[in-house]
Image (cartoon, rainbow, N blue to C red):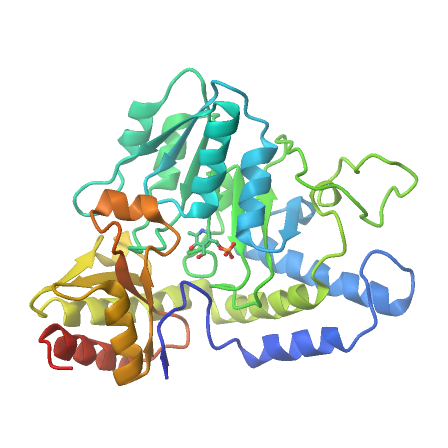
Length: 380
Ligand SMILES: Cc1ncc(COP(=O)(O)O)c(C=O)c1O
């Protein structure tokens, strides 16, 4: 099996992660609730995960890091929590995942917020000036993915922030956390959302957000926190304000171990490895007749997610043939991002997506190029 679906979830998980989850499962503990040693230990492992996220994103106060069950939940907390009202204007990129697009679409339909999308150019790139052009006196929020989960294109978030001043940016770092260095992210994003099970190498069921000091979010859910239990009001301090209910202790123990692997390996080295393989792959694809790569092909403009279409093939048939004939696992269709495909011109059929991760090798890429050569020539 050749696993090239790391944008969906990274695989394999490092042995340290598997061990940490197993160890947490074997311990009798609910963190932050009881005073016994096992409960304190569980709290420590969550604290370790928070410290790991803080190191990755250069965050000084790790109490502003909130854990959630995935990035979709974190994005909902961020987008809904800002309490936008009728007539408030929001700008997003045109490459958003449904985790951003659906909350915004619902806020537009149910609450009358006005939502514009900054277009991409013919290379799938976004010019930061497009955001400036869309600004209105009523613009209250910019929501942006850091890298497209369809084409791998990096978005110019820092440049957009320089153009929009005090308007908050909610960043979707699902495809970049652990894949590109982000120690300065808190200087150009106001809310950073992340998922634990992709580049951070952790288990599913983990994710979260960092909220800049001064921004207050209304919780989506309230409930037990193990703190201020005498009051019927949700605590107003982070992370408790946004962390109702018993956390995913087992998953977060795994996330702490995944973050450890990422930080010890070094995000720079991970980026170098993934991009070397990506450029090798793109070089190989360049000479296949009938195959189109969607989005940018330059190293500095992208991450390691590569979407292709081949004349005469549907994206799902191509993915199925790659698995059946070569054992190559990819993803086909719209990748939960119909907007991207509308802007790229690949809607509704979508693309076949290859996504390279930390544990892929040059052989995986070379086998995939050869497979695509054969399939594109119709020689199944
Ligand atoms: C850019 C982007 N945003 C959001 C998500 C949603 O992630 P999750 O399913 O972990 O909430 C994904 C996952 O594919 C993604 O690629």
